[in-house]
Image (tube, rainbow, N blue to C red; front, side):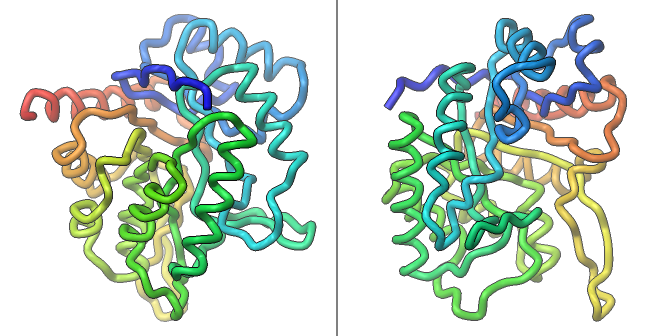
Length: 282
Protein backbone atom coordinates (compact mmCIF):
# COMPACT_ATOMS: atom_id res chain seq x y z
CA UNK A 1 0.00 0.00 0.00
CA UNK A 2 1.15 3.53 -0.77
CA UNK A 3 1.71 5.79 2.25
CA UNK A 4 -1.23 8.09 2.84
CA UNK A 5 -0.78 11.85 2.34
CA UNK A 6 -1.80 14.11 5.24
CA UNK A 7 -5.45 15.11 5.09
CA UNK A 8 -6.17 18.85 4.81
CA UNK A 9 -7.69 20.62 7.79
CA UNK A 10 -9.87 23.03 5.80
CA UNK A 11 -13.23 22.09 4.27
CA UNK A 12 -13.40 21.26 0.57
CA UNK A 13 -15.93 21.19 -2.25
CA UNK A 14 -16.72 18.99 -5.20
CA UNK A 15 -15.09 20.39 -8.32
CA UNK A 16 -17.33 21.39 -11.22
CA UNK A 17 -15.93 22.76 -14.51
CA UNK A 18 -18.53 25.57 -14.39
CA UNK A 19 -16.65 26.98 -11.39
CA UNK A 20 -13.15 26.75 -12.84
CA UNK A 21 -12.79 30.41 -13.82
CA UNK A 22 -13.88 31.57 -10.36
CA UNK A 23 -11.51 29.08 -8.74
CA UNK A 24 -8.61 30.17 -10.93
CA UNK A 25 -9.28 33.77 -9.89
CA UNK A 26 -8.47 32.81 -6.30
CA UNK A 27 -10.06 30.04 -4.23
CA UNK A 28 -9.48 29.50 -0.53
CA UNK A 29 -10.90 26.02 0.07
CA UNK A 30 -8.94 23.23 1.68
CA UNK A 31 -9.29 20.65 -1.10
CA UNK A 32 -11.31 19.56 -4.11
CA UNK A 33 -13.01 16.24 -4.75
CA UNK A 34 -13.86 14.66 -8.11
CA UNK A 35 -15.89 11.67 -9.20
CA UNK A 36 -13.45 9.15 -10.64
CA UNK A 37 -15.67 8.06 -13.51
CA UNK A 38 -15.70 11.59 -14.96
CA UNK A 39 -11.95 11.36 -15.58
CA UNK A 40 -11.48 7.88 -17.01
CA UNK A 41 -10.31 9.28 -20.36
CA UNK A 42 -6.62 9.89 -21.01
CA UNK A 43 -6.55 13.59 -21.84
CA UNK A 44 -8.41 16.65 -23.05
CA UNK A 45 -9.75 19.71 -21.25
CA UNK A 46 -10.99 17.78 -18.17
CA UNK A 47 -7.48 16.56 -17.40
CA UNK A 48 -5.88 19.93 -18.13
CA UNK A 49 -8.16 21.53 -15.55
CA UNK A 50 -7.62 18.72 -13.09
CA UNK A 51 -3.83 18.90 -13.46
CA UNK A 52 -4.01 22.64 -12.75
CA UNK A 53 -6.04 21.99 -9.60
CA UNK A 54 -3.77 19.19 -8.41
CA UNK A 55 -0.72 21.45 -8.62
CA UNK A 56 -2.35 23.88 -6.20
CA UNK A 57 -4.73 21.92 -3.92
CA UNK A 58 -5.02 18.53 -2.24
CA UNK A 59 -7.33 16.23 -4.18
CA UNK A 60 -9.79 13.57 -3.05
CA UNK A 61 -11.20 11.04 -5.52
CA UNK A 62 -14.67 9.58 -4.99
CA UNK A 63 -15.74 6.52 -6.96
CA UNK A 64 -19.29 5.52 -7.88
CA UNK A 65 -18.76 2.50 -10.16
CA UNK A 66 -16.94 -0.28 -8.30
CA UNK A 67 -20.21 -1.90 -7.17
CA UNK A 68 -18.55 -3.18 -4.00
CA UNK A 69 -21.84 -4.49 -2.63
CA UNK A 70 -22.67 -6.52 -5.74
CA UNK A 71 -22.45 -10.24 -6.44
CA UNK A 72 -20.78 -9.98 -9.87
CA UNK A 73 -16.96 -10.13 -9.99
CA UNK A 74 -15.20 -6.79 -9.71
CA UNK A 75 -14.69 -5.21 -13.13
CA UNK A 76 -10.96 -5.65 -13.83
CA UNK A 77 -10.96 -3.05 -16.62
CA UNK A 78 -12.66 -0.48 -14.41
CA UNK A 79 -10.16 -1.18 -11.63
CA UNK A 80 -7.26 -0.74 -14.07
CA UNK A 81 -8.59 2.63 -15.26
CA UNK A 82 -9.12 3.67 -11.68
CA UNK A 83 -5.57 2.63 -10.77
CA UNK A 84 -4.18 4.78 -13.58
CA UNK A 85 -6.22 7.75 -12.36
CA UNK A 86 -5.18 7.53 -8.71
CA UNK A 87 -1.54 6.93 -9.66
CA UNK A 88 -1.64 9.98 -11.92
CA UNK A 89 -3.11 12.43 -9.39
CA UNK A 90 -2.12 10.83 -6.05
CA UNK A 91 -5.18 11.89 -4.01
CA UNK A 92 -4.91 12.11 -0.25
CA UNK A 93 -8.09 9.99 -0.05
CA UNK A 94 -9.99 7.58 -2.29
CA UNK A 95 -13.54 6.63 -1.33
CA UNK A 96 -16.40 4.48 -2.59
CA UNK A 97 -19.94 3.51 -1.59
CA UNK A 98 -21.44 0.67 0.40
CA UNK A 99 -23.78 -0.17 -2.47
CA UNK A 100 -24.02 -2.00 -5.78
CA UNK A 101 -24.74 -0.71 -9.27
CA UNK A 102 -23.89 -3.47 -11.77
CA UNK A 103 -25.00 -7.04 -12.51
CA UNK A 104 -24.62 -9.33 -15.54
CA UNK A 105 -23.03 -6.59 -17.63
CA UNK A 106 -25.80 -4.08 -16.90
CA UNK A 107 -25.05 -0.82 -15.09
CA UNK A 108 -27.73 1.05 -13.16
CA UNK A 109 -27.86 4.79 -12.72
CA UNK A 110 -28.23 4.46 -8.96
CA UNK A 111 -26.42 3.17 -5.88
CA UNK A 112 -28.54 0.28 -4.65
CA UNK A 113 -28.78 -1.04 -1.06
CA UNK A 114 -27.51 -4.33 0.33
CA UNK A 115 -28.85 -6.60 3.09
CA UNK A 116 -26.89 -6.33 6.33
CA UNK A 117 -26.15 -9.99 6.97
CA UNK A 118 -23.08 -12.00 7.96
CA UNK A 119 -22.83 -13.43 4.45
CA UNK A 120 -22.94 -9.96 2.91
CA UNK A 121 -20.36 -8.71 5.40
CA UNK A 122 -17.86 -11.41 4.42
CA UNK A 123 -18.45 -10.87 0.70
CA UNK A 124 -18.13 -7.09 0.79
CA UNK A 125 -15.03 -7.24 3.03
CA UNK A 126 -13.35 -9.58 0.54
CA UNK A 127 -14.27 -7.30 -2.37
CA UNK A 128 -12.94 -4.21 -0.60
CA UNK A 129 -9.72 -6.04 0.19
CA UNK A 130 -9.37 -7.09 -3.47
CA UNK A 131 -10.02 -3.52 -4.66
CA UNK A 132 -7.51 -2.06 -2.20
CA UNK A 133 -4.88 -4.55 -3.37
CA UNK A 134 -5.59 -3.72 -7.03
CA UNK A 135 -5.36 0.03 -6.34
CA UNK A 136 -2.37 -0.22 -4.02
CA UNK A 137 -4.02 2.02 -1.45
CA UNK A 138 -6.51 2.04 1.38
CA UNK A 139 -10.01 3.31 0.65
CA UNK A 140 -12.85 4.83 2.63
CA UNK A 141 -16.35 3.37 2.51
CA UNK A 142 -19.38 5.69 2.65
CA UNK A 143 -22.61 4.96 4.50
CA UNK A 144 -25.44 4.88 1.93
CA UNK A 145 -28.60 6.87 1.33
CA UNK A 146 -31.43 4.34 1.00
CA UNK A 147 -35.14 4.36 0.25
CA UNK A 148 -35.96 0.70 0.93
CA UNK A 149 -34.53 -1.82 3.41
CA UNK A 150 -34.13 -5.60 3.35
CA UNK A 151 -36.31 -7.61 5.72
CA UNK A 152 -33.49 -10.16 6.10
CA UNK A 153 -31.01 -7.63 7.46
CA UNK A 154 -29.75 -8.90 10.82
CA UNK A 155 -27.01 -6.36 11.69
CA UNK A 156 -27.41 -2.66 12.41
CA UNK A 157 -25.82 -0.52 9.71
CA UNK A 158 -23.40 1.13 12.15
CA UNK A 159 -22.22 -2.27 13.42
CA UNK A 160 -21.94 -3.57 9.85
CA UNK A 161 -19.67 -0.64 8.97
CA UNK A 162 -17.62 -1.08 12.15
CA UNK A 163 -16.97 -4.74 11.40
CA UNK A 164 -16.38 -4.03 7.71
CA UNK A 165 -13.63 -1.54 8.57
CA UNK A 166 -12.05 -4.05 10.96
CA UNK A 167 -12.11 -6.97 8.54
CA UNK A 168 -11.15 -5.13 5.35
CA UNK A 169 -8.73 -2.64 6.90
CA UNK A 170 -10.54 0.25 5.21
CA UNK A 171 -11.53 3.61 6.63
CA UNK A 172 -14.99 5.15 6.68
CA UNK A 173 -16.56 8.21 5.10
CA UNK A 174 -19.44 9.53 7.18
CA UNK A 175 -22.03 11.16 4.95
CA UNK A 176 -24.10 13.15 7.44
CA UNK A 177 -26.75 14.04 4.87
CA UNK A 178 -27.26 10.34 4.13
CA UNK A 179 -27.87 9.79 7.85
CA UNK A 180 -30.62 12.44 7.87
CA UNK A 181 -32.13 11.10 4.63
CA UNK A 182 -32.25 7.51 5.89
CA UNK A 183 -33.52 8.50 9.34
CA UNK A 184 -36.43 10.35 7.73
CA UNK A 185 -37.17 7.64 5.17
CA UNK A 186 -36.95 4.70 7.58
CA UNK A 187 -38.13 6.32 10.81
CA UNK A 188 -35.14 6.08 13.14
CA UNK A 189 -33.19 8.61 15.21
CA UNK A 190 -30.42 10.35 13.26
CA UNK A 191 -28.84 11.47 16.55
CA UNK A 192 -28.68 7.89 17.82
CA UNK A 193 -27.12 6.79 14.53
CA UNK A 194 -24.39 9.44 14.82
CA UNK A 195 -23.76 8.41 18.44
CA UNK A 196 -23.41 4.73 17.43
CA UNK A 197 -21.27 5.32 14.33
CA UNK A 198 -17.70 3.91 14.51
CA UNK A 199 -16.30 7.43 14.59
CA UNK A 200 -12.72 6.26 15.22
CA UNK A 201 -12.60 4.98 11.61
CA UNK A 202 -13.93 8.22 10.02
CA UNK A 203 -11.40 10.06 7.85
CA UNK A 204 -13.77 12.24 5.82
CA UNK A 205 -17.26 13.69 6.20
CA UNK A 206 -19.69 14.63 3.41
CA UNK A 207 -22.41 17.28 3.59
CA UNK A 208 -24.99 18.02 0.91
CA UNK A 209 -28.50 19.24 0.22
CA UNK A 210 -31.42 16.94 -0.54
CA UNK A 211 -34.75 17.00 -2.37
CA UNK A 212 -38.07 16.58 -0.54
CA UNK A 213 -40.90 14.38 -1.80
CA UNK A 214 -43.71 12.13 -0.56
CA UNK A 215 -43.99 8.36 -0.82
CA UNK A 216 -47.12 6.49 -1.97
CA UNK A 217 -48.58 6.73 1.53
CA UNK A 218 -47.99 10.48 1.76
CA UNK A 219 -45.11 10.18 4.23
CA UNK A 220 -42.03 12.42 3.83
CA UNK A 221 -39.42 11.00 1.46
CA UNK A 222 -35.98 12.61 1.14
CA UNK A 223 -33.82 12.12 -1.95
CA UNK A 224 -30.04 12.42 -1.77
CA UNK A 225 -29.96 14.73 -4.80
CA UNK A 226 -27.03 17.07 -3.94
CA UNK A 227 -29.16 19.90 -5.28
CA UNK A 228 -29.49 22.45 -2.48
CA UNK A 229 -27.73 24.08 0.45
CA UNK A 230 -26.99 21.98 3.52
CA UNK A 231 -30.06 22.01 5.77
CA UNK A 232 -30.21 23.16 9.39
CA UNK A 233 -30.89 19.57 10.49
CA UNK A 234 -27.75 18.32 8.73
CA UNK A 235 -25.63 21.15 10.20
CA UNK A 236 -26.79 20.07 13.68
CA UNK A 237 -25.89 16.45 12.99
CA UNK A 238 -22.52 17.56 11.61
CA UNK A 239 -21.72 19.44 14.81
CA UNK A 240 -22.76 16.36 16.79
CA UNK A 241 -20.39 14.19 14.72
CA UNK A 242 -17.56 16.70 15.16
CA UNK A 243 -18.17 16.61 18.91
CA UNK A 244 -17.27 12.91 18.82
CA UNK A 245 -14.62 12.92 16.07
CA UNK A 246 -13.04 16.36 16.22
CA UNK A 247 -12.06 18.26 13.05
CA UNK A 248 -11.72 16.07 9.97
CA UNK A 249 -11.62 16.67 6.21
CA UNK A 250 -15.16 17.72 5.25
CA UNK A 251 -16.59 17.99 1.76
CA UNK A 252 -19.63 19.97 0.62
CA UNK A 253 -21.26 18.17 -2.32
CA UNK A 254 -23.43 20.05 -4.81
CA UNK A 255 -23.89 18.19 -8.11
CA UNK A 256 -27.28 19.32 -9.45
CA UNK A 257 -28.87 22.77 -9.86
CA UNK A 258 -25.40 24.21 -9.41
CA UNK A 259 -25.12 27.52 -7.57
CA UNK A 260 -22.69 30.34 -8.21
CA UNK A 261 -19.21 29.71 -6.84
CA UNK A 262 -19.65 32.18 -4.00
CA UNK A 263 -22.62 30.22 -2.60
CA UNK A 264 -20.77 26.92 -2.70
CA UNK A 265 -17.72 28.59 -1.17
CA UNK A 266 -19.90 29.98 1.64
CA UNK A 267 -21.09 26.45 2.47
CA UNK A 268 -17.48 25.30 2.79
CA UNK A 269 -16.74 28.30 5.01
CA UNK A 270 -19.66 27.31 7.28
CA UNK A 271 -18.25 23.79 7.60
CA UNK A 272 -14.87 25.26 8.45
CA UNK A 273 -16.39 27.38 11.21
CA UNK A 274 -18.07 24.30 12.69
CA UNK A 275 -14.77 22.41 12.63
CA UNK A 276 -12.91 25.30 14.29
CA UNK A 277 -15.55 25.48 17.04
CA UNK A 278 -15.25 21.73 17.63
CA UNK A 279 -11.47 22.05 17.91
CA UNK A 280 -11.78 24.84 20.48
CA UNK A 281 -14.22 22.78 22.56
CA UNK A 282 -12.12 19.58 22.35
